[in-house]
Length: 270
Image (cartoon, rainbow, N blue to C red):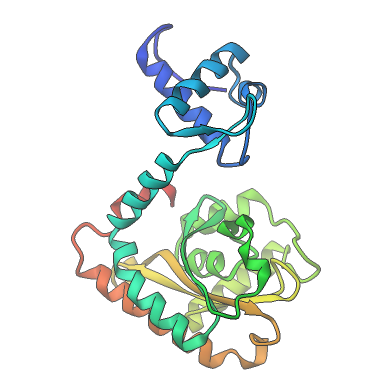
């Protein structure tokens, strides 16, 4: 339902509805008026008008009779937002260099509640076909190395992760809260996280946190991760990749400490 304190007919109410309509497309790639009306809690006629207006401005685009999806204008806005983030600017050359060293998929992830959103990815030539799906853009924090690396150094993220529940993704996913708490403590001790087929069987990953602040005030705001086939990222043989991932994350962290107002635009999502 749309939450608003605006009076009926107030333009602010229309803005609130429009934003709620856009939120629907974060979970579904394509929707019509009926689906939007049901999710937002508005009349189908209102949903139809709102979708039409958003499409007229390029925010959405029509995709078949009565169907809509996100338009290229949203992509443009997203690219502008990313290009203005200190995090994004500091990470690009470092992640590209890491990809060239490890020759596997390298990603930059940030916390979004109990999930991790990958802002950027650098693909190796031998990229596993399973990584091409859009489902890899946003993953549960508890079963991903990036999520654990961030949660180990950010209590707010850890709390969101536990409160959301630990859903089993594969037979290897850790779903026992006590054991996961122990794993987070281990990550704080060694400085990186590693998962073995906990998100999808056959895929493993290593991640290190990007930290801001100093001493006891250090807090993770993102993570650098390397992901690939488990045959190349075995639990007992990842020390070199883990060390290189930590080096990359530390380099980005160092740059952010000298940047003005680091990551202020990411704070609402933590």
